[in-house]
Image (cartoon, rainbow, N blue to C red; front, top):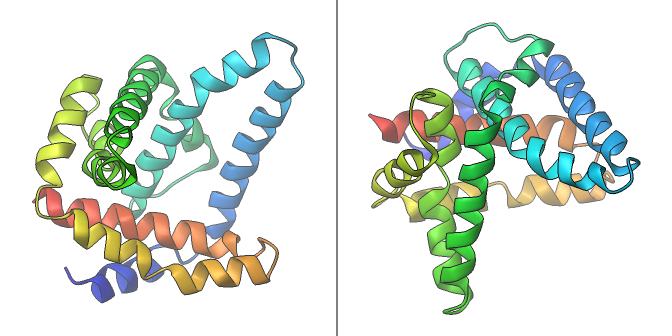
Length: 189
């Protein structure tokens, strides 16, 4: 699919779902906010569960691209894979950091290599974190620049988010996330 087709499909797919996605985001923000007020263990809890919520959102956006119904409860769909999601997050961060030691550009390139790993884990929960990371590297061969350009195509939207003091993010974040999920679906074939 072309960039325009990915974005057009995303606009169509998120129609009528923005409210549910906002409630999901508010739940995650509330949990994160609550963790911030728990002395000592709060940051640890947040560090452990944040990747699981990231995985949950990947599951949700993949469901949206498949035109499946989503519900607010789906925000917890990745919690049963907290360990895998945490380990995958640690691996991605660690390897990206190592590549970044060579200068910023290799780190950015590797970040794009690993960018589909959470979608792969969401789509294939039986995989280990290492397998999802390896599959992402293979999947993104020849597609890193495509994803980079896709991200750049949203730059005007992010100026709008800034101009509206974040209010436009209510639409922009689901739109961009669904577009990236569509990108994943188009290259996994």
